[in-house]
Amino acid sequence: MSYTGQIQPEVLNQSVVVFSQNYLPISRINIKRAIALLVTGRAEPLDLFSQVGWQVRSPRLELHVPEHIRLTIGKSERHWKIPAVSRREILRRDRQACQYCGSTKKLTLDHVIPRAQGGPHTWENVVTACEPCNLRKGNRTPLEANMPLRSKPKAPTHPTVGFAEQFWREHQTS
Image 1 (cartoon, rainbow, N blue to C red):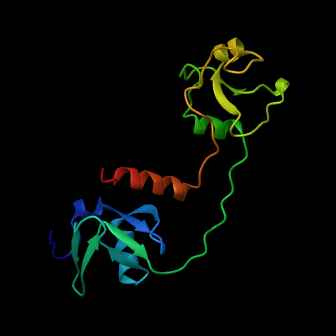
Image 2: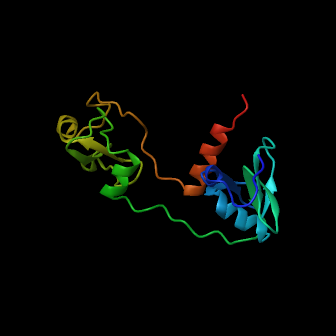
């Protein structure tokens, strides 16, 4: 696609995947930001999967903006800590649904291995449960109560790692 003059409005809706210097997909940005990174030399084009992209012209410059770019500047990674176990974070991780029945009403927190049995207050042991399921389970483990969990509880991952995993799942060649 070739455009003259200003960037066409439909091109402004496009997004570009940004890779780190080590080729780790780290985020998706809008095309205006990608153009700024390419023009200033802070990123370079990557043609990983295809030659698809957009041709952008201005009075002084003609630029091919690919679907994938790689940062050329080194930036120390910000240190990321796993957030503390809290009601808000557990509800977010479990997508506001009971991990026993899937209900989204009257949600509470439940310790998979009850605290009375020595269960810790950790990401791997706390789940979202509706009041009826929490009362039914009581001071028992899911196995003892015959109430299997819908998913295994785990700590959140670094946002960049989550984006990279999603990106590679979408681009697998199987």
